[in-house]
Length: 520
Image (cartoon, rainbow, N blue to C red):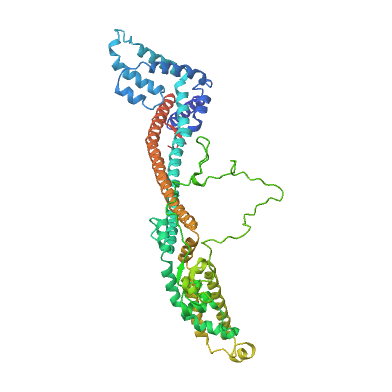
């Protein structure tokens, strides 16, 4: 009796355990699904060798398919597996219904091919191993790969847009530099070469405006003369302050010339001028060089033969002068001849060469004028330092300024400010460039080339930006075009995951099966 009770209790306990297990879900990690199927002996571990035959049969069967919209959608962008084959057979049951005989079999070769494929798939659960392989491949490679591509295209688009922003800033900076250079030169920048050549003609007016402020430096010049004990110090500065921006001739000879012959300045307005004449004839014609009227006679003829013997050198001088009607009579008076002899010195002379330039325009005297300005400024700054840092007793005892006019720090500062104003105007970027253009016409080519390089750089930056914009848009479009593909692969993977879970569930009495770790 005791034995019966124990036996009954054991059977009830086993039944309760079995019923309890039916409600426990089966959790399988998606990445280890294939190993799980092999370990449970659901599929053969050598299933890879059999799948090749199935794939070959599927390829042959796809070559002969009926026209059906369902088949087109089913086969579109999908890797055909066992579950697709079952759907294809369901569609063929409709399209191949005419070939069905009285025994319920189909005579269509298409149906036979796909039914054969199903049989091979179902042998040793080959279809489940392949489905697991496709699922793992999609989860581990396909979906992450497409996402990585999309992210990469988006990153390339962002980098291209970032580069466009940098190029825009560079373009703004270079164009601002170009505009600043044009502003310094006083030109609009539309036709740089022509505008620069035209601007050179405004130099005399600019020099005249600067010369107007120079007389205000006379007090400073006199102060420096008193200090140095040389009333003739800073001669060029004194001359400009009293007589203005005269010619170098007038500064040298203290009198204005009757006429001024300034060296001509020739500019090539066009960047490249092809010479129409003046070409070198290398005698490519008939071999004879035509020298025209200036042909050289080398004395090849008999008449021009020169017999040079020892002691027979002909110096070309007549032995005795013979009177001639054209002989000059030196006894004629100057008044009768009409020749006017000028007085001693250069009064009424002609200013030529460097002497024809104004002091501000002459390269050498311009430099001397600047040096005198800086010399005067250095003296005034030293004097201002003495006045500002030492008391009057110290100055009177230690400096050499006892006999100088009385100037306080304020007046000295005003003089220095006046000198700075003259120096800045005289040595401005515009005048420097125009002065070099006038005295070195090739400088206009250099200056024009530099300005055009900035414009060329701006144009190149613009073209690069346009190219980058197109690339960025292309990257964005490629990323967007991959998103439907990603969504389609994810959807197919989810469907396949559900089909695998359902198939495994049937094998374990409809227990819930969960494939975990599939981050879709």
